[in-house]
Length: 166
Figure: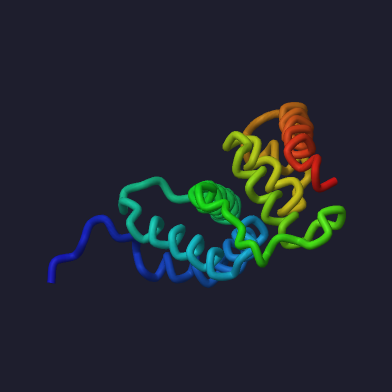
């Protein structure tokens, strides 16, 4: 049987999966709000690792790489579902002055998906992963000041888009 050159070493991949699958799932779940979608994100990320070229550079910081990958794949999934924004009539809240918490979460996901990729990633790291600005700056190799500016602008945009819910 011929060995495929585009498959990572299974033992190393298995170790990475055992060590970090919970982190990837939790990160994806916080963004997608759905366990099935979080599982899809988890599968996508580890399939990409499986297909990684064997001569590719090893990951410097697996946890950081996988967390960022989970955020980006989750946001891509949310963005891809933006086209289907219809709400069945039965699901419309009867009292519009008190929005349904589920609809508010869905609106937040849609608004987050409309942020630029860097802004969405920084926002998710700051508020979903509860990382400090300094930790995010180190992870993304940018200044703390830039992280603060990105967070501020992202919050402003989200506030504008979610104004009717606040």
